[in-house]
Amino acid sequence: MIAEMYQRRMKGSIVALVALLAVIAVWILIVPPQSGGEWLEISVLALPLAFLIAICFTSRHKYLQVKDIQVPEKTVSLMELDHLVLKKDVGFFPKLLLFQKNGTFIGKLKPVTIPFWLYPLDILLNELTLVIFPVTYGFYTIDNQKRFTFKRKGFLNTTVRIYSGEGEVLGFYEQADLKSLLTIKGTLYNKLGEALLPVNVKGFSGDFTMKNIDGKQWAHFFNGYFPHKYTDLFRDIDNDIVDLADDLEDHEKLLLIALISFLFVQKRRR
Image (tube, rainbow, N blue to C red):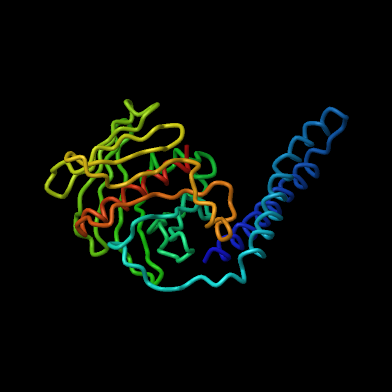
């Protein structure tokens, strides 16, 4: 899956590169530059072209480095996890791939269904799309089993409803967006509305240590920290690893992973 991730990035950058070249070609044909100044204006597009070419070559290089590394493929119990490695996947809308440190694929967080008319709006609005038009996200394991879903609602005050794979309400997360400019603050609740976990995330780095009201640590993340011995598999500079408590109740563990997934989807959009 890690090799496939880099391969998708390479293919995605090639598609974006071809699309941008087509736009530039059509522009030149319709409005031919008449002066050096106009050619200079067009030359500004060389920057995104260079960026896409760099992504293409670096992704291929990383793919070649990891394609022959043997990674165990097996179904992983979310309840037994004591950490997560979260990686961004390519696509119009934010997607996350979740791994263990040894490269074992845990599952994918992705939109469940997306109306076709949201795709052009996403190009125009970018990160505002999921705020104005909330999309349901689902987490799918390696054997394509849906373990949980969540949907964000609200603009000034965010509410994220979290459901099991069968559609049963597990709980919800509330976040006061007006109070979360520098520090993201919220609370995770169970399905009865009882507070489980206060959330305090540094807005710029995304660092957090989550402890319940009894002081028990549920999760910890420090931006930029990643054990060096695992970088043979994870070749990116930006690797995110989150430590998890491994002795939580099943519903608490699902709520925690859903909350972390939501926070990292938001983090990718900031």
